[in-house]
Structures are given as structure tokens and as C-alpha cells.
Length: 134
Image 1 (cartoon, rainbow, N blue to C red):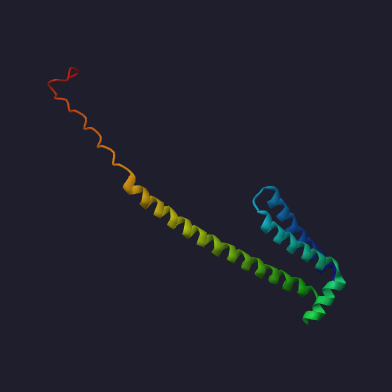
Image 2 (cartoon, rainbow, N blue to C red):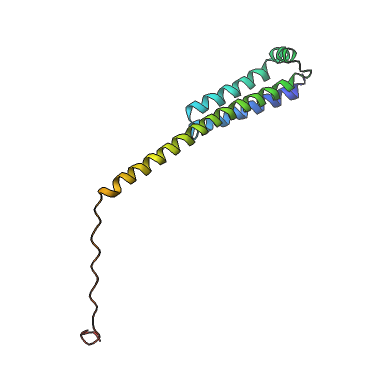
């Protein structure tokens, strides 16, 4: 494998790892998702560093050009992450729907028990003749 490709693969994987650590430090990425991204970036770094592993995996998969396995691994990991996020999003949508329905039922139960407030008093009008300021 060309050393330039290996260097680019290591740098790209390192950038992903650095971005994940930055998002964790800023508390913009939850732990459960951080573990997925850390695992994915570490797997890419290992495959980038260990040439024999990359060539062995390429032979097993039937890929003629071993660096293509890195792209295959990135695509598979991206697919798995997208699937995980789709499942999480579906679960959250169902929870949101259920919570909305519960809030509507609670509002409906509270409406009959609330007593209507008396209407606000109508302010008295002043005649122009009785106003001392005119």
C-alpha cells in the first residue's frame, strides 16, 4: 500500500477522533453515541496502521485494492450508525406522540373542574361636564 494513502487514512481517522473528543468535552455528544463514534474511529485507525490486517481483510472480502477496505469499513460503520439513529428517532417520535396525548387528556380532565372566573368589571365612563380637568 502506498504510504501516502496510509498517512491520509490515519490523519482522517485522527481528525474524526479529535472531533469526537471535542464534542464530548463540550457536552454536545451523549456518552452512548460517543462510544459508537469512538469505536468507529479507533477501528479505522487500527485498520490504517496495521497494514497486514488491512490486506488480510481485503483478501477475505475479495477486494483487490486493500485501501478500499477502509472506505468499505467507513460505509458500513456509517450505515450502522444511521440505522441506530433511525431506531432512536423512531422511539423518540413515539414517546413524543404518547406524551402529547397524555397532556391532551390531562387538559381535558382539568377543564370541567376549573370554575370560570367572573367577568372583569366595566370601567365607569366620565361625562365631559363632570370632568374637572376639562
